[in-house]
Length: 481
Image (tube, rainbow, N blue to C red):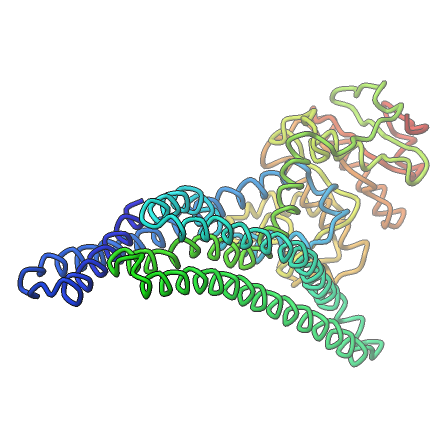
């Protein structure tokens, strides 16, 4: 509102000064107050523009920070089971550039939309009261801008969605290439992937240029409509000035304000197209947040739900592959979007897929950059039958320098380490001996039984007879309800 008042002040002081000097032949010295008002209006407008940018940028940053926090909270609530079914590249794209592209929407488009709704009627009213004919022309031509905005916006939304899909495809493919780079090098398929990446990159580049073309053309269309509308008002004012039906002061005042009446609507259109990419990305972000809040994630239900665990005992869960045993573990831990059955601080969990990172064996067991209890480390390596590795041995990314059985035993030692270090009451093991030979499997079973004697409740998913034969409580998953 202050910016609009400054604009009216600038237009009035300029038109009044010119009309008084050239029509009324007033001396310039008697009109110095016009220069003061002009300077005050200019400084006020400059200050308002700076404040608008400052507060809009801060507000957009706050909104992005809040949305990013809600997005990460939603992903944590949905759990790794949900995340495993999604593309990591797509989630990464939404959390980084997708959220960053929302800044024009919150910093530019929304403030401009509210500003237009407040200011445009004021300018229309001032012009209407100053010159009725110009006010009629303004009212007739003003709706043309939002009409063209809507028509252009429909085309822009479709193009922006396709451009976001192309960027997601490029990110996803690039991530998969990085993951399988070693395999591609072994089978000499790197050159083929170069061609694929080049093709996908070119497709994204073409779509980006198409988006830019539409954006510039839409801006040009809105500018052209506004320019033609102002030209109609200018021609009308000029003809009436020649006929003597209008004074120079009023005509010049209306002519200076007319572009300002169209400007807010033009800016709404321009800022909408600039923020279209963020609007397209926000739908994916808000969908994830809504999914976590409304609990759309379906939890597995099976006959397992009718059984209870036996405390301080070895409970073995068995059933056909693919029946949902691992999913049940995720739900027990609250990773499926529901409330966890156990307090996570009381649980040590070994998933079915062994997850290792680049570092030493000791770091993979106890954690990187944390003090390691060497005595406990040696004990859990013995319990996990990890007799063929030393703590200082280096493990490559994703366990590339160890065998499958060694990776499984490292993860088993990690679970034992957490259980003993945190005095966990529950131990959840998903296929703990599936990749072990008979001798080491027997040693691990003995270690599990020793933990049971210490009062730990062990729940293990397994198909191995050696583990099922020693179970104190057996649960068979027969099907999904």
